Image (cartoon, rainbow, N blue to C red):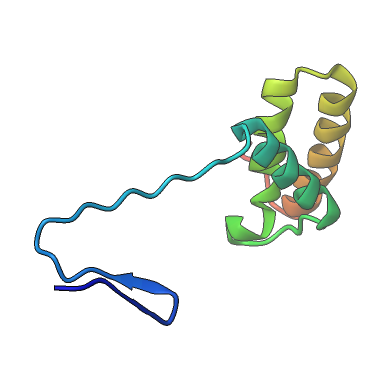
Length: 94
């Protein structure tokens, strides 16, 4: 029984073998930061489905962890304008 290298893959022909995969990743905050940066680049659009404004969920999560008052105020102002546009024309209950 021999081991072979085919198309860059190790092929083991032994019954008893184990495999280990190791991934080195950055801190989760790095990925949250990148996600909110991408969400800021894309305009969040009012719509009937939340997929068109998922970016606010990411930005709100980032704001909660960052605890930067200026960023939070800017985000709230942006979201309030968005929400006002989205709910324009909806009658309020008396």
